[in-house]
Each structure stands twice: as structure tokens, then as C-alpha cells.
Length: 61
Image 1 (cartoon, helix red, strand yellow):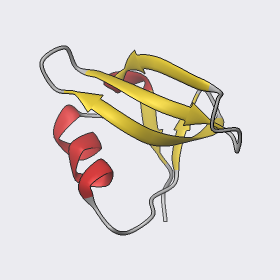
Image 2: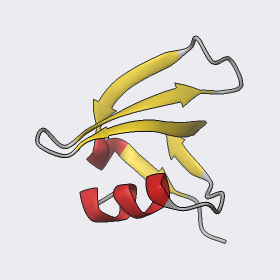
Image 3: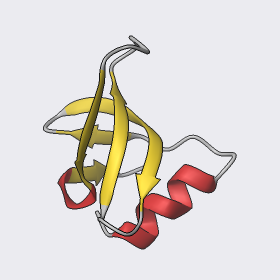
Image 4: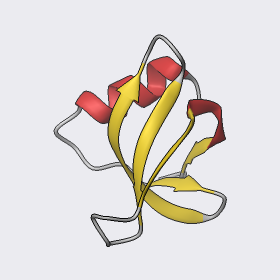
């Protein structure tokens, strides 16, 4: 995913389906300077990872 798209999804009031390696994630924070995103994996708020934005994939609608 491109950084600009990740920012659009992060800032949107709408919900978008985003995956990391086939697992659903929720974008919690974007580090624009470094192209990184902190994501919540699955439904557990304590299960977070920081990954390169280009590893994220938006599901087709």
C-alpha cells in the first residue's frame, strides 16, 4: 500500500478492510517520515506491530 492511501484510510471516519500477510489489521498510527504503520492485529488491542506501510494490503470491495 502506498503511504498516501494508508493516511487516507487512517484519517477517514469510514472503515476499510486492511490486511497484513492475510490477517486483518486496524491502522492505529502512521509514521509518515519513516513510512511505517502501527497496526492492531485481529481483535486484541494489545496485539500490535509496527511494519512498513508497503506490507499492508487493502481488500477489494
